[in-house]
Image 1 (cartoon, rainbow, N blue to C red):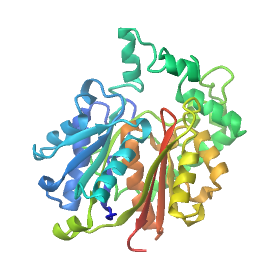
Image 2: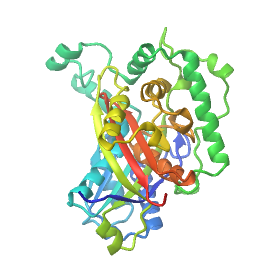
Image 3: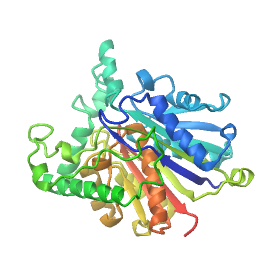
Length: 384
């Protein structure tokens, strides 16, 4: 099997709902990340074999294969194809994994894997709600096989997060402490300029808008998301806008085009779990990846796990035995935001840059996804 090398990974700064990126067309937003990637790497866009882009809620300006549209919007060659991937919150991580697999298989030499989401323009779950006009209240309930297997109850991230908190004995106070840590780490990372190397501009916008000064006392005053729930807005990821992009290349392409690789893809995989719990799959997915690679969690120097909700991360840490000091060291989606389809490649960019900053060897990325699945990507830094 051939090696897949990571040449570079970039992202836009993340805009908060109604913020700096709210009025940017998703194709223009994605194009900004693509241009930044091409300019930084010096790759000739014409040699790219495919553009694989993660995006969720593909309606309106995100419909019609946004992966193709944003490549053309960036002004790049028409002969280069593009495709859009929807694995919910892990969509652009899946784009990276699909790209790596294409190179490993020998069917591609150069892949751009990217993600985009404007949640201000197209609200979360808009695609699921769009079916109501046609008589479908839910994508799941009403399918005979689904109803027989899982019943007709609520299927949502909120319910999944509540079930995880209950099963793993995670209290509201536990979640709020993690949320506070996320904000503190994110603000420190911004102040220290740790994100500067991974961010490409959208106009003059270059600084994440999500992180804020908060406290446990402030969080304690918030009402739960539902009556009796331990969840509040403070322990959930922020609705956000953003884009991200990664350049992957084969050994041949690295030599042929004079590229400088920074890491190699060590492992890609995905696993599933209970779709009603929905967000617990990073646990079996991480176990699977570690078993396949022969690594232990202690071998991993930097970990990014998406903070869809605080209990997702806290349950994962409990089960995997990870050192919290290595997990989301620059803050997570609770502070920095979660622009759905863009998040996978966004966290991948942060993972790569942080691995270099701490002079580490292995970095691991995992994201919980709607439907009860999770991806794992492990990279190995080349200069370690």
